[in-house]
Amino acid sequence: MNRFDDRWKIATESARPLWHEATGDLPFGFASRALARWRETPVESWADIFCSFGRRAMIAVLAVSLASAGFAYFQWYETRIEPPALERAVSPESWLP
Image 1: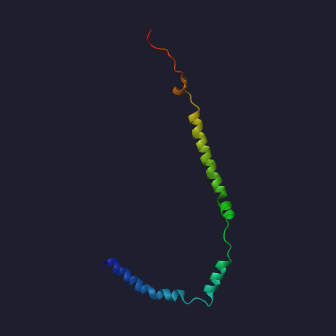
Image 2: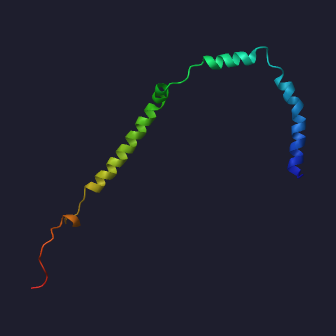
Image 3: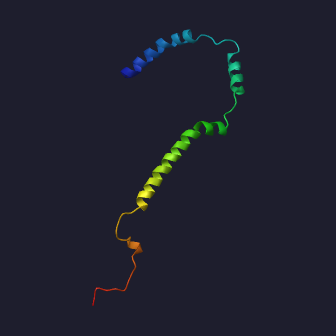
């Protein structure tokens, strides 16, 4: 074994009796009371979860929508003088006389 394993084994052996002294025995009926309280707690519905995260979700959706609208606007509004290449009419004009 290496030094770490030796140190780990010594530390766990010295801490084992202290754990039992610190925790002691649980009171009578503690486990049954804990299980009964766990069964009595209501399960969160989807509406509660949605309401708790609703405001943050709406802010995030608004931010993404504004960002995408801004990108779309700057791509749509072009300041070029000539029309785009797809809108140019194809004409039979030739450079030959």
